[in-house]
Image (cartoon, rainbow, N blue to C red; front, side, top):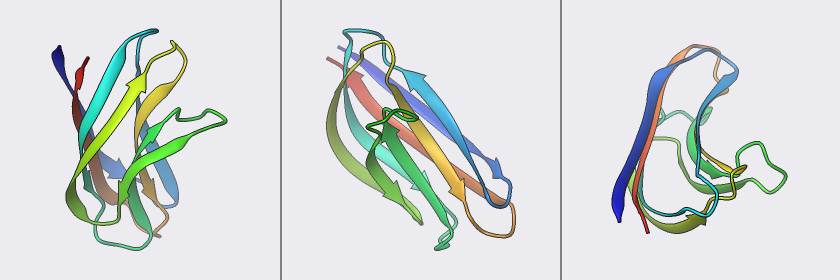
Length: 107
């Protein structure tokens, strides 16, 4: 078992989104245990943790419009194609500093 963690904090331009993707290797199993999001407390901004980002069956594991730490228990099995992504969405008219992170373990 080994610890995993990733993060993405950056300025996101008005009316755009940015994503940091992580590909889980084929056959590897991860348990996501924590999601942290920082989304400027605006209805027009959201930070999401998404499994199979860009795929036909994308699943939002967790999301926030504010600054929060959310305990999560989600087991993901890599197939060499599905990606876990921290997605920073800004639908406001101004650039915003947004960020997110996840932690877990390989099992």
